[in-house]
Image (cartoon, rainbow, N blue to C red; front, side, top):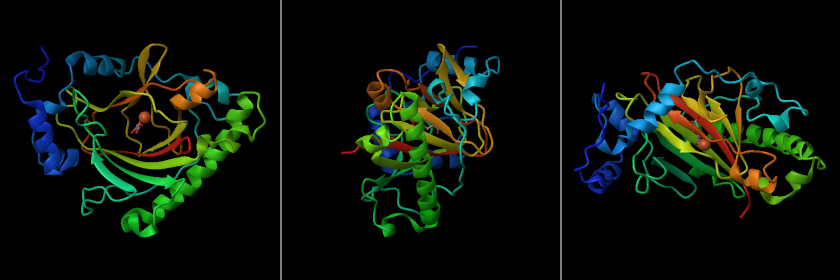
Length: 282
Ligand SMILES: O=C(O)CCC(=O)C(=O)O
Ligand SMILES: [Fe+2]
C-alpha cells in the first residue's frame, strides 16, 4: 500500500510557526482527538519504514546489551541496568514557556528539522549551577531532586568503571571536568494517531559524555546495532546508559556513542522517559 507523504505544496514554515505559537505541544495535538497528524510531522516514508521494519520483532536486543554491569563488562556494553527511581511528569497547568533553568518545549529543533517529531519535553539544568528551588515546579520538585541525587551517584560509579575500562586510575575521569554538567530531561511521547508516518524522536547520538535513561516500561526506543535498528526491550527496574560523542572522542573510540531513536507512540498510554544527560563543564 502506498504510504502518504507530506504534501509538497504546503507552507511548512507557516505551519511550524502556527504550531509553535499555539503552545499546545504534541500533547495538545494528541488530546484534540484528531485522527491525522499535521503535515509538518510527516517524515519521508523510507525513514519510518526502515525503523518499523526493524522493530517487527525478528531482531531482539542482543543479550550482551542487557548484561548486569560488572567491571569486566563495562567496556564492551552499550547498556547497563542499574538503580531506579520514579517521578511524575509534565504538569498540564505549568506555563509552556522558558524559565531561567527550566525549559518546556515541543521538539528541540522544530525550526531546523525537515520534519517534526511526536514528543514534548521538560529540561532542567542541575549542574554545575543548580537552579533556585522555587524555579523548579513544585509538582515534581522533590522527585526531581531525588532522581538527580541518585543519578549523580550512579554517574560517579560509572565514571570509575569507565576509567578502569580504559586502564586508568578509577578517579581519572571523575577528576576531569567531563562530568560537570548535569541536565535533567523528562521526555513525553503522547499517543500518536498515525505512528507509521512520523517518529517520536529522530535518529541521533547524544553529544555529551553519557546519558542515563529510565523509562515507564513503554517500548519505542531503538538502537543501531551492527547496522540494524533493534528494539530496546524495557527491563523492569533498570536504567539504560548511552555513551555520548564526547566520551567517544576522549577515549579515542574505545567507547562508542550509540545511535538511537524513538518510534512514535501507538499506545493510548503516554510513553515517558526520564533522562540524565552528563556533559563537559563550561
Ligand atoms: O526517550 C527516550 O527513550 C530517548 C531519549 C533520548 O534519546 C534523548 O533525549 O536524547
Ligand atoms: Fe538521546
